[in-house]
Image (cartoon, rainbow over all chains, first blue to last red):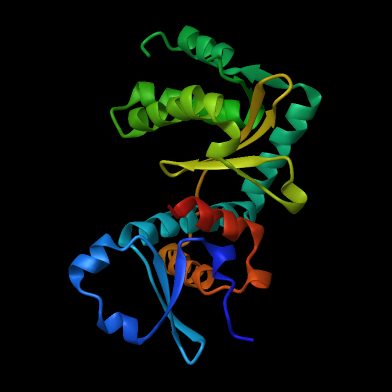
Length: 109
Length: 130
């Protein structure tokens, strides 16, 4: 079975045939409120979506990739684990307290 | 509306102190970076801790993470006591091919079948869509 569960992915996704592409002009593309999955013979071949949506998705993906990259770094992971142990042990300081001590030690700021 | 109280674990305290010292002693971009950190701590995390960040899974369950202006915040949220503990604030390491990877992931999500969509990828797509 080749059909995509579009409604699961996004309720704004619509499946259309390749021929639909030929009928779209620039104005229609600008006004498009749906993401189009282009199919040929019931097989998805491409996706057409608003440029803003594509940029937003890339931004989210970058964020995921960055986090993955950090969590696989030993020093970074150790820093988070150390913070977690501090939290469990109650070894924390309020942000106000941290700022106060910085201001005391560095009155220029 | 009163937001969450913010507490810092020692790694986050160290980061904040270092950045504050750098921002005070130089006229570099560290001042802007400190403003950005303060925005996250005073505004974003205190008012929308769970919707601003993402909940990590598996070994890291219980920890949320938020990326903002090139820095990554890892924190725990305690809803009962309206408190957030920032465990660590980190920059990098960022891989050079991150843009390429992001584009590939976008394509993968758009063409993914239900069974192969991870919850995280699905959330990312949902948040990006209208």
